[in-house]
Image (cartoon, rainbow, N blue to C red; front, side):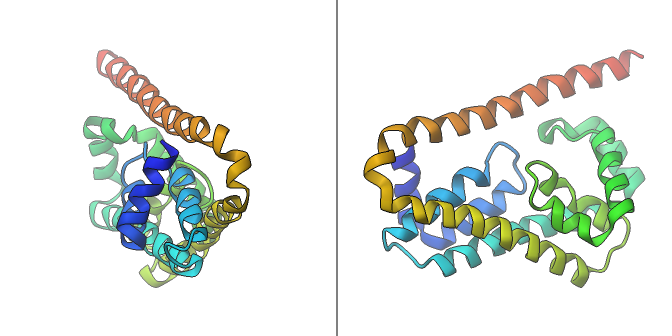
Length: 205
C-alpha cells in the first residue's frame, strides 16, 4: 500500500496532492495523515520540492474548506440542520454535529477555525458555522490558511525526514500505512452505522 500510494503521488505530482487534499476535506475516509507524509516522502526522493508540496496541499485543503463555508453561508443553519437529518448520512453529519460546531465557533470565533483545522474530523466541519454565522470570507480564508499550512507542513515534513531512514522503516511502514487507511475507513463505516441507528431511533420516536 505504501509503495502504491507513493507511486500515484509521484505520477500525479503536486496537482494530484492538491486534488487529494481537496477531496479529503469533502470525503471523510480519505485521511490527510496518510496523503501528506507519503507526499513528503516523494518530495525527499526528488519528485518535487517540499515547499511546492506544502503550497499545493494547503491550496487543495483550503479550497475544500471553502466549499463547506459556502454551503453554510448559502444554506443557513435551519435548512442545514434539516438537510443533515435526512441526507447527511453519507458524511455522518447530523443536526447534533451541526449544533456542536456552531457552539464551538460561537465561543471562540476565528481562533476556532485555526485550531479546528488541526483536529481530525473537526477540520472538515468547522467551516460550516463560519459560513452560517456570516464570518467574512477574507477573515475565514486567513484563519483557515494559517491552520491548514501549519498542519500540512508538519505532516509533509515528517514524511520528508522519513526518507533518510527508508531502509530501516520500510518493513513496518507498509502495514502501518495500510492500517491507517483501514482504521479510517472502518471508523467511517462505524459512524455510518451509528448515524443510521440514531436516525431510525429519531424517526421511531
